[in-house]
Length: 307
Ligand code: ASP
Image (cartoon, helix red, strand yellow):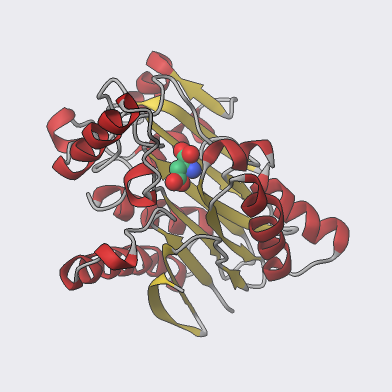
C-alpha cells in the first residue's frame, strides 16, 4: 500500500538574491520536520487527516513560517489567524478565521469539524470550542517575531509614501499539507497569518473551502498559498478538483492549469500542493519559489525552495 505527503511553507519565499546559507538550511530543516511528523502517521497505516494535522502543527510551531508562531501582523499590529482542514473520505471540513490564542489554529479548525455541525466559526465561540477541546493557548509573546514586526513597519512606511511592498517574502506566506494514506483517503490542511498589513478582519482564501483548501477522495486534496483574494475569486482548490472530475485531467494537469492559466494572468501569484488518491503529487507555482517538500512510500524525502 502506498502513501504520499506534500507540505508547503508558503509561496512568499525570500528572493534568491537575499537568501543566506544559514536561513536556507533552517527552511529546509523546518520542512523536513513537518514531513517526518506527517510520515510517522502514514507509515503506521494512520489516516491522511492525522498526517496533515501533525505536519501543519510542526510548520505552525516553526517561527520562520507565516502561521501561528511567526504569523504576520495586520495594519493595526495584531495577529489574526486563518486555518482549515478537510477530510477527503467524506468531505467533512472545519475552519477558523481571524483567530488569536490557540497555539495551533489547525487543531482549532479540526475541533470545529469534530465538535460542531458547522464548517467555519469565528470569534469567541471558536475560541470556546478550542478551549473545550483542551487545546493549548499562548499569549502574544509566543507568536511574536521581530522579522514579521519589522516587515509590518516597512510596509506601513512604504504605504504612507504611496508605494506597495511587493516583496513576496514580506507580504505573505502560509503553511499547508496534503496527504494520501494507505487506505486511499486524502486530506488537506492549511494555516496562515494572512498578508502583512492586511485590514483587520480580513479573511483570506486559506480557511475558505474550495479556495485555499479542499479534499475529496474522488479527485484530490489541495492546499494553496499566494494572493488570497485571487485564489478565492477563482475558487482555485475546487477548480483543480473539478477539472479532474469533469475533464479527466491528472492532478498534475489540473493543478498546473489553474496555477498558470487561471491565477497567474490575474495577479494571483502563488502555488499549490495537491495529491490524488493514488498518491500522485503536484506542486506547481507561478512565482520565484515556494517552500515545499514531499515524501512517500515510494518517494524519498525531499525539500525545495526555488525552481
Ligand atoms: N493565501 C494567504 C492569504 O491570502 C497568504 C499566502 O499564502 O501567502 O491569506
